[in-house]
Amino acid sequence: MATIISRKRRLLRSVLLGVSVAAVAVPAAAELKIGFVNVPRILDSAPQAQAADQRLEKEFGPRDSEILSMKRELVVINEQLTKNGAVMSASERQRKESEMRQMRREIRRLEDEFREDVNLRRSQELGKLQRLVVEVIQKLAKAEKFDLIISDGVIYAGDQVDITEKVISRLKQNK
Image (tube, rainbow, N blue to C red; front, top):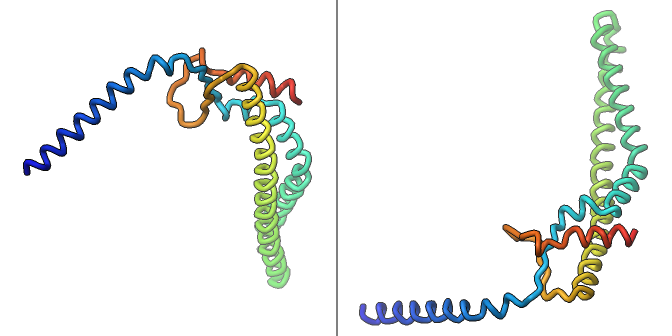
């Protein structure tokens, strides 16, 4: 029992010593030049992000329109079946129902492919943009002699260390 208490005291002493050493080291750290970057804001504001969105819209807009057109056609067929189903022959009603099932499957397949393709391309565009943002931040850090730039996981960053606007400005110059 005495050895456990002795170990706890030694541990407590070493922790207190560590805290006092850290308190002495803080003034030295105060001379570091530290910056904070809000990466999500950059990814929303960068002209390159807007250009990527436009490229994706241009690339995938026609496919999206095609799927919407097929959905409208499916609604028309369903309305015809609902409206005229009672006067249709059994074989015609079965044919329309079969056509609707087939069309729903085709729309589902096209939507799945569309979603996968859009996600893949969006990831590619985001990857290019992230690499550019990192490059711009590194150049800014070297040019303005920052010792440390942080981004994710920050709970608070004051305006004096927030360099997000500088990064966005450089990205605008880098179009």
